[in-house]
Length: 123
Image (cartoon, rainbow, N blue to C red):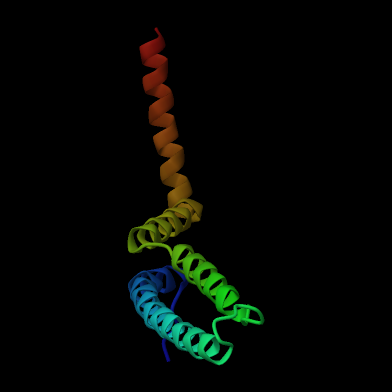
């Protein structure tokens, strides 16, 4: 069986996670609508039973809304965009290239050329 290296995983996640975030947002919207409907029904039934008194109204309605908004917002913002994943993958590829023997050899040659050009310009 083939094994994915780090760069392949980054490219895979760049494709999968933004779609997952979109699906999560859709799920949260549906769950939010259901929560609002349930809270409305609960409030109507409770007010009818208590003859309009707000005393003893369950505090879970407000807390559920706050927790829902906080969780949805946090989760939606921590998933990076596809572009960010591609930047990370490019950074990983660059690091691998620079750390290899051939990369070190090329960097030494580039540095030698830059040093020669700077020396020529400073004269």
